[in-house]
Length: 287
Ligand SMILES: [Cu+2]
Image (cartoon, rainbow, N blue to C red; front, top):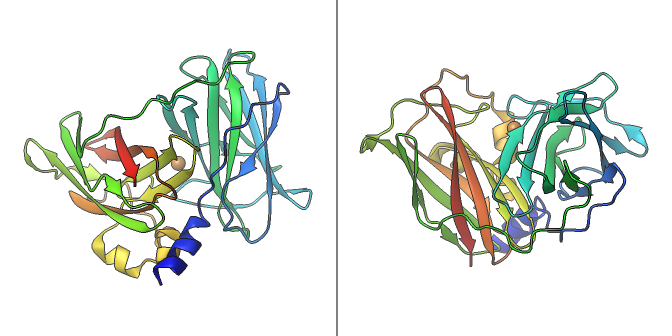
């Protein structure tokens, strides 16, 4: 049973080595999710925007036809995660869908360098598709970083007035694990937590060796019981209406994750405390 769960769940993860970015301004994405109903392609064109930022023009296609319809996923048409190659920099943004199916956004990276952009969405009828683009931003041909920066180890991190604790932070690789989350404020369970993008919290994991990607959502124990383990709760989350922004989030909840291989994972947990979005770095070790 466990191996079947693993086989299905690992299909949601892509494990690809970082390839050198081409010098051309249009990039082919590597499809790092294989749960879609059919193989798809993803493309990203990078041009200079008039204000000096970078204009991203992205599109996905199937059989040569550009996708124009996407399912709404956690209140957004498309999620875009940007990390620097050394994994010190993280951003989570949302491009706009144009009538012709192109997804566009202007972006200004913190500093020039090699970045990895994950485009994570659900083209209608195709299942989730995640594409990874490896591209230089705001520079000609950056050398890939020689070392990735691991987040600080430890079960607890401070984020503003909140103390966030994950248990455990070391998980067996190749099987689904549940991580308990607890958030306190001034030593007591936090009572002013609210949903971020329709979920109790979001968590993005990137493998520090192979750039494997996974996006998890905070769930209650009851939701975990309802969830299909095959996709770490993804389809269950999609079948439920997103939480409204004013809803109250419990101070304890869980993430269901799968570390596909033994390596350290940088994990960025995002939650809203009061009216502020916090992005909290953790190191999750796959054993
Ligand atoms: Cu998003």
